[in-house]
Image (cartoon, rainbow, N blue to C red):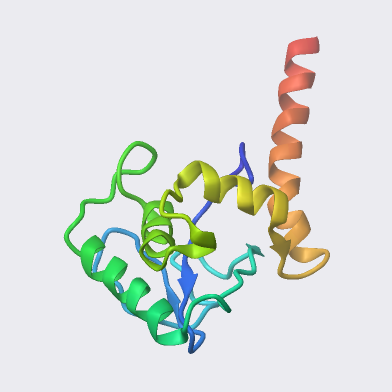
Length: 141
């Protein structure tokens, strides 16, 4: 997240507002502010209207069940982004069944909203900007 702010922990919320975020263990739905690594800083609003609430929740529950049997391998294997993509694919979100990590990262980068200003804007963008500044200064020395 410090290098690429659009990469971070990801979860999906069911129709009742409970968060499902997978991190290699069986998923227990919880409060949206209680993600694995703390409160979220950015979010993407998904339009659930084309899907009935029960179909949306069923897709998330099925993804939860499937991922209870996977081993967490960040990047090239199953991770939290894969879990969200699987739920979106099961429900056929936006008429598609090919959501993936790249699609979700781009969605967060281009359409993600910050939870609060300035706290979460700084939390997301200050670390990579500081890291880039250090790299620039070190290359100029």
